[in-house]
Image (tube, rainbow, N blue to C red; front, top):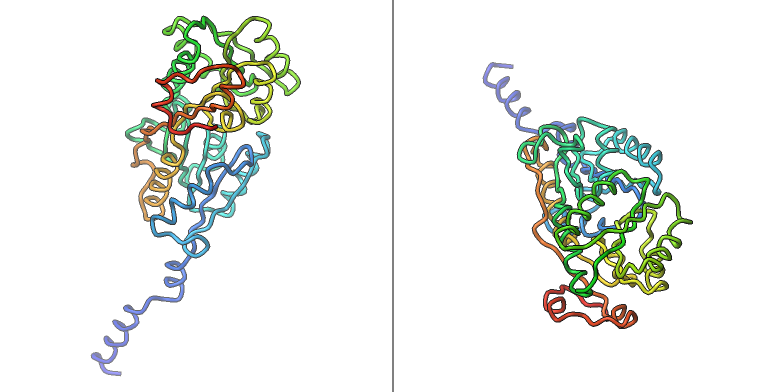
Length: 321
């Protein structure tokens, strides 16, 4: 073979992708979804957001779902399973999930959501420059809790106290309770806290609120506090219930004020999309939610013989009737 013919063969071969390269470009991207409670809440919203960005479910990406069934040891095992697959990125929708994922890997990108103060938790170095394998969306917990109490106060302007039911087994509830106390102080309210460690303590906590004359109750979201059960207990004891998790108001609580979760998981999909296309989490700033939703259960208000203030009605994003 002469030199000209040899070069033609070599250059031609260089222009044709190898079988391995073609396989790599066609590989389905695996996205791990780590869920402490195994509820798969917001997963559908995230999948739709990925599809809207041009990804095809089952063809260009696939969700690898692992649930912790509400047990910390199971959550750690689930995080380990995702890292061993391995997945190309992990979505961690909460504090417990983000911490479990970070303990399981320092190399696979992790996109967190709904995490209060990820810097203090050691998940990122700073909001502007996360610096490791974790980024995503934090939550402005103190502002959210303060707004929730302020809105609830509009229903009961003469109230001087509010009950708060918290999960004593969840360390994050300690800081949330602190935020609520600070917000209550600004509103001239006293907080009556009821930390509970097991299911059997929840009904007595509501009964105690009622005996004390506590006029309204805030429930801090927890896998122990199943929304329909908690909402039923609040109605049973005739107590207006509010939460930063909308599930409680849909199940019969009075009011919910929370991040717009559709918007949160749309942004999470944007970040995952960037990562799958080559961006590094270390250089993607942590974001804060910019959209919030106020939901009111007018049916519950009637059952509690409360009027929904006009100031609440005109700001509500949804009214359940």
